[in-house]
Structures are given as structure tokens and as C-alpha cells.
Image (cartoon, rainbow, N blue to C red; front, side, top):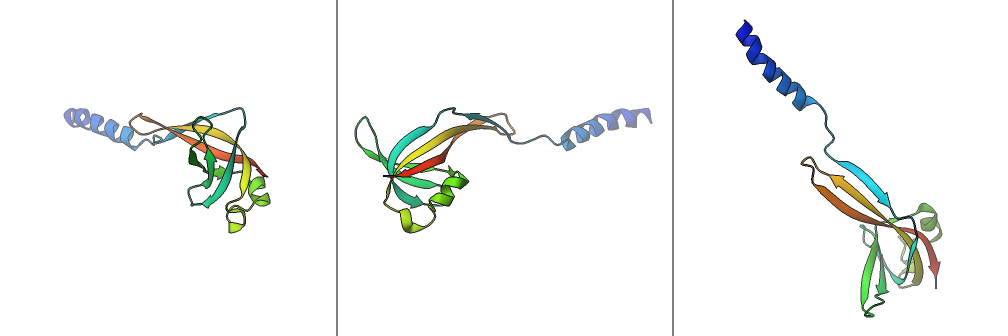
Length: 122
């Protein structure tokens, strides 16, 4: 009987430890404290974000900047989901939030989330 107890105890402990809920993903967020601005032409919403075509200051080349989020008040004023504002020039004020997630193995992944906080038509 004592031998069965000695053999069963480690198995029971292993079972209890594996059944304990550990979070698979934990998130830590870091915010930028200042608003950033660009001037760009609205190129539409692709489901993953709102696209604006803008120009690099250093070499003058064009690129698309995608904003994953938009504040609700801005979206009420400028319905970017409609085609009304396509190809219109805006001054875009935005913030960048870096979200760091850890997986079950402890590896970190950083994702930058761009959020539109204000729009001004030009």
C-alpha cells in the first residue's frame, strides 16, 4: 500500500500542476505620450486598417501608411468606411501604441498599433 501511494503521489502532483490554468498570452502596453502628424491622401479601408498615401521627407518617395484603429468621435465626423472621402487630402493626427505579447514559451512579440485621433481636411 505504501508503494502505491509513493508512486501515485508524483502522478497526482503532475496532473494537478498541468491542470492549473496559466495564461498563454500576456500583454504589456507602452504608449507614446505625444501626438504625431502626417499629411496624406485617403486611399480606403481594407478591413485591416485605414490607408493614407503620404510622402517621405528625406527622399520624396510615396508610401502607404496604415492605421489599424480610429477614435469613435473621429469616425462619426468622417465616415471613412464610405467612399465619400476617397482621394481626399487630410492632416492626420495619430498615436502609436506598442503592444508586447509573450507566448507560452516566453518569447516576446512587439506590434505597433497606429490610432487616428484627429482628422483635418486640406
